[in-house]
Image (cartoon, rainbow, N blue to C red; front, side, top):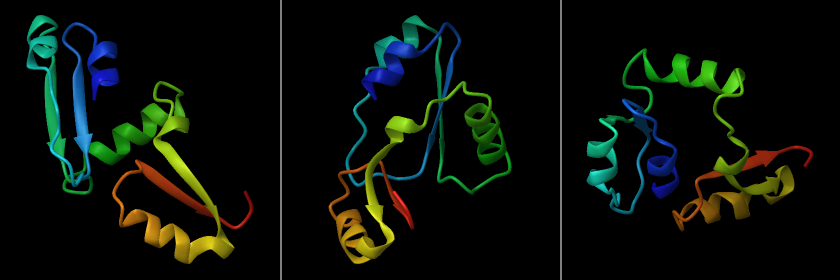
Length: 98
């Protein structure tokens, strides 16, 4: 989360989408000094998160390249599913052609 806190602008908003097995480590001083806000969501719990995040991704304002932390070919699907059990990666991509 430290990267998010460093990139937070004055009055910035952070939307946390999804769940992680580890506790979040936040430095509230960064949010206080920048008058930042944190919003939580399970992802599909409302109509706000997905359409707005998709628009930001499509416009290039959010670079999702680094969010995909592991890539597997379709033939490695079982290994990809096993990898999700470690809860280490942000996003695992399984694609028919890498």
